Length: 133
Image (cartoon, rainbow, N blue to C red; front, side, top):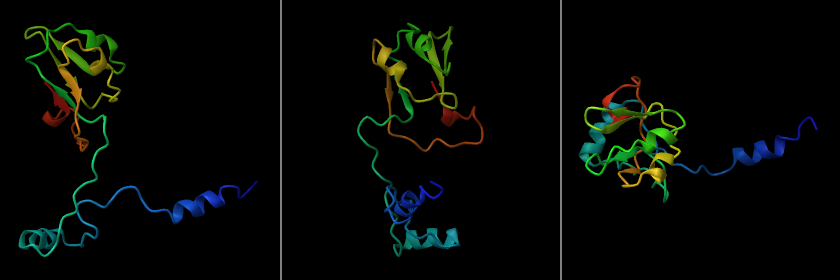
């Protein structure tokens, strides 16, 4: 029982990874030289892995379609959606969002949808990239 995980460990060690190393297979220590090589055409950039169908990435919001019904605010489990009373529109804080897609499902006008963008890392949780208006 003591070493029952060893077969699984060995299996994982020799298993092929599901992802590719982006933007290049082998990135040299000097990234400036790498960028120069890419510009000159000596090195090819590997495209990122395709996102699967129904991927839940950054939320897309069409403010023109929004009627201000506040149903998305009621179903949001993380309270990531704020209502702007003056404009009768919403503001979504992606740093709080758990990407559950409940707001998309309940929206009567389909003004909310899940996009394919997944590179959302930032040091400031209130940056423009992490707020959808």
